[in-house]
Amino acid sequence: MAQERVFPVFLDKAAVTRSNADASDIDITTSINNFNQGSGGAVTPTLADGTIPGQIMKFYMVAGSGSNKSTITITTPRAGEFNTILLDAAAERVELMWTPDGWVVLSFDGATLTTA
Image 1 (tube, rainbow, N blue to C red):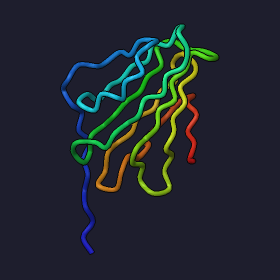
Image 2: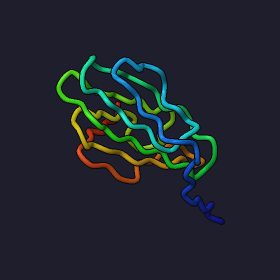
Image 3: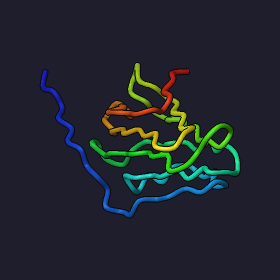
Image 4: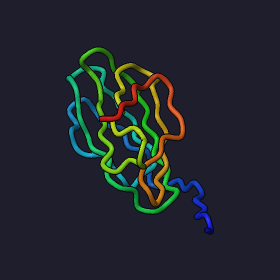
């Protein structure tokens, strides 16, 4: 059986920085989403399916602590992968890639990843 190859693709739209009160879903047309949750409470955006196999998605917590956090729900994780990402401190980060089977976590630092 032939294996499908997936190569990383970074979308060229500028990075998006989400502010404290931005509760909208993740912008799927860019590869970089920064969270600035210095104050203002928690947000719970959803990450929809990618647009092309290999699409890279990066999340970075610029500022956040305690109740000022971001909990991201992944709509379609690959089987056995994490489906929730918690960013609750500055400098936490996660990198994912969209595959034909769903989102796959490539790397993370400091973030809390869980499976429901």
